[in-house]
Length: 140
Image (cartoon, rainbow, N blue to C red):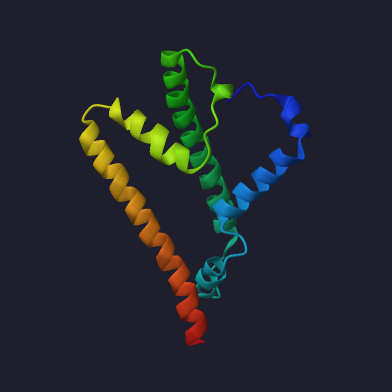
């Protein structure tokens, strides 16, 4: 993670994937962000939020990347594989690597239960954001 392959930066697909990830993380162009910002008091400054949100996302992204790559590296080391030989994307990561990583922690059943609850709550919370956008647009 900290010794990048600089030749990959010349590939347009890498940049496209990065932009898609940034749009996804920041929820750019979703009605939820506009809806939430409309409820902010008019005299309250938004400059601090413009710094806090992206910096928080960068910190969380680096931290989660370190944790994921640590476990992926551990599993590849155990199996004698190269990390570049893996083809993990999206749902494979959430339902293959993370449960295996949780299984080597102390009290794995407790951590797996918490992981499942967090995934369910994340889905419910995402739906609240979408439904609030729809209900506020119908209300207005």
